[in-house]
Length: 133
Image (cartoon, rainbow, N blue to C red; front, side, top):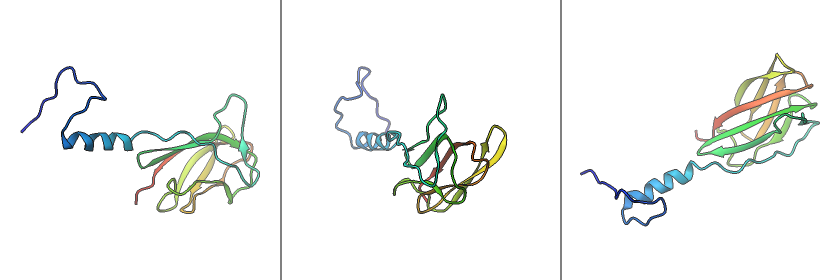
């Protein structure tokens, strides 16, 4: 049987229905975490100026990572994502480097965020992946 809600219902009103708690729990899971700035390693840093700093967050089970970085060593982690923000299997992404060149990003199961292809002058990061197997 379909249920109707009062027309004047406010978001924080108390409703004594089990399904309401389930809906609230689902919505809470979709609230994004705060953006976190990674701790760089192996010579990597933010590009600076007017460009987006590197940062990551999670929305539900999807991790989003973005920013413009420069100057590091390839094939080793530029930073490490914490537990809970790591993919169940290694994922790779094509990105842009130094304006128009190809770049490759690998996000590893240990949290290593690795640039394996590109130009260290700058590498654009704009990736998202699921933490769910």
